[in-house]
Every structure is written in C-alpha cells, then in structure tokens.
Amino acid sequence: MQKRQTKSDDKIVEKFRAVLDENTSLSIYNKPGDRSYYIIRNDLTKDYEVEVMPNEAPILNKILSEPEPYESSLADPKILEEIIFPINEAIKKVFGDINDLNLESIKLAVGGNKSDYVTINELDLRRFDVNPTLSGLMDFIRENNESILGFLDREYINEEGNVIYLNCVKKSVSDNIYSIKLKVLASMQQRGYFLQQEHKYYGLQLYLIIESKTSDDDKILEFLKEIDINWELIFFRRKLAIHDWTEIECEKNAENLKNYMRSKYENLNYFDVNNITRLIVKNQLQFIVADKMASLLYNMKLDRSSQFHEDSYSITLKKAEIAAAARIACAYLGIHIELKIDSDISLDEVLKYETELTNM
Image (tube, rainbow, N blue to C red):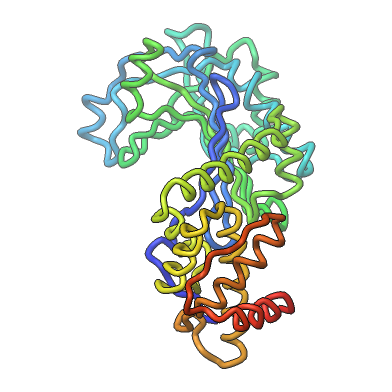
C-alpha cells in the first residue's frame, strides 16, 4: 500500500519532556522513520559562576568577517571537573573506551590570575600533543590544575545567537546510535530570562544530545541510569501522560476523536471516520473502544486492499462492518452493552463481518 504523504511527514511528530529537578530536563523527540533524539539540558547558572568582561569587539568586528560577542566570558573550571568529565567517563563505561568524546572546540584561560592570562584553544592543545578528546583535556587540566583559571567563549554563532564554550561529539557510537554530542553554551536569546530569574548576565547551559534509530535502545537507557536519570519512572510517566491526555481529549470532543483516528489510521477515509464516530457517540462508548474499532477496521481495509489490488483509502467501509468492529471491540475489552445500530443495518451482515474480523 502506498502511504499518503502529509505536510508533517518530515517534521518531528512526537515530543516528551520531563523536568528531572530544578536544573535538569530531558526531552525525547521521535521523527518518522529512523530518528529519535534525547536532549538532556542542565542549567549551570545556579551552581557555577560566569565572569563577564568587555573585550575588543567594537573594533575587531569592523575587521573580522565573523562578528564576536561584545563581551568575553569566563566559565568556572569546576564545570569541567564536576559535570563534563564524569559524563564522558559514563559514556566510556557504557559504550566502550573507543567512544571517548572528541574535543571539537574549547578555549582555556591559563595564567596567574583573572587579569593576567593567556588563552589556548583545541588547536593549541593538539600542538602540545594533547589527545584531542575529553580524556586528553582532563589529563591536561589535572596536570596544570593550578594555572587553569576557567574556559572562555570559543565561538559566537551570530545566526543562532549562541555563544559556545565547549563542543564535543562522537559519531557512529553503535549500530543504533548515530551520535552523541555535548555542548556548553549560552543563548543570547534567553539572556532576558536569566537576568530576570537569576540576576546573571549569562545563563550557561549544558546540552547532551543523543541521536539514535530508536528511543528505547538498551544502551541509552543504561547510560541514563549511569548519570542518575531514572528512565523507568520517566517512561512510565510518558506512557501515562500520552495515554491520559489522548483519552481525555477524545472523550471530551468528537472532533478530537476524528482527528486522532485520521492521524493514527491513515487508510480510514472521511466517511469511515464519520461513521465510526457517529456509532461511538450514539452508544456513548469509551475511547478505548473507538481505538480498538479503528485498529480492526484499519487491518480489514489493508486486507481488502491486498485482495482486490485497490488503494485502501479509496475503499469505504459499510456501516455493518463498523457495527461488527464495535461488537468485537466491546467483547474484547469486556464491555457489556446492547449496541444501538441504525435500522437499515442487517444483523446477518453484522454477524458475517464479525466472523471475517475474528478470523483475520
């Protein structure tokens, strides 16, 4: 069967967000096909300081092709020791040592005090024969601990309004996991929020992004557990939240039920959905019955399509077929009800289609 394309086919269609504590959230995005994204965001602003100084951007931005932010900002080195390096160790523990995150960009402040220092970036570290990974950075910082004052803004992405302090990535982590990315950044777009809520000029945030083929990969769940994220509770909440919201909205409003069926069961056409909804409303049946009915009829149309070589969307269900699906759904769910059907529907036809649906 040829699936009908919709305008949203290339968009993320499912999102779940859980607030884990006052500083951390986890969002899961599922795209059609084979793309799922875990995005863990940790707000570093409450626990760590960022020192902001004016820089030479008023002059430099007339010289440089890419503009710089008008301030230099220095992040607390404890972020690396207490947050970044433990995450990298957890990644290596779960996915293997070969998946040490590659260091894409960083700028360290090295010197005697915050008014007298030099900066070295990832290119300089490579020249010093530092392994270009987070483990290599960790070894370098621990060997030079007394002179590492912090890490500074390394990139300014003008189009996004993001100031990047640290950027790491590892691609092809496993058969199921395309990449793991770790970023520390400040969003210029969110500056107003942090000024209002935290009275701080920059809101530093850590982002950990996992891109995979599926949202329930065992290794991802093991990794979440390793970094103290209770994924079992999150998935339980996610399942309940999606189910409860859908059920409540569909039982509250027939239009919501129609939209749900059109979205989930794409071969049910306009007349099918209207007739199913009409029977549901007439008998005041629950959402779970409607969903089971739609599932049965969806499969019936698929079967008819393969038998008669027709597009299943163009086949319109008979009212007797819909009534048969309702009777089976109620029986399956243990709901005892004397179904009210239109007078022009033959009971013999209903029984015939019940047998067909039962034997599919």
